[in-house]
Length: 100
Image (spheres, helix red, strand yellow):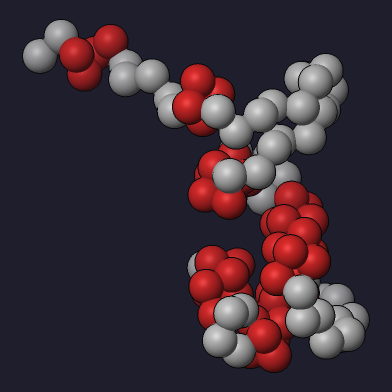
């Protein structure tokens, strides 16, 4: 929730957005403060990097990449980066829902 709030408020209040991210980190025992990040691209990179660690093994990072229209990096499962195309990002409807 704090990740989405930080992402949404950055344009109007970058300091508050950084505060949300620092709040998440503080809850995990990390007291590192961020330098004033004024570039949204740099802030989103920080946000995604932190979320990757936070959502490890939960399957939630896919939705962040989808929302931000970002390329998913290569991993041990995918040897190449996954581009944010409709084919890759729109999940198919389950057969059980189309046979009603």
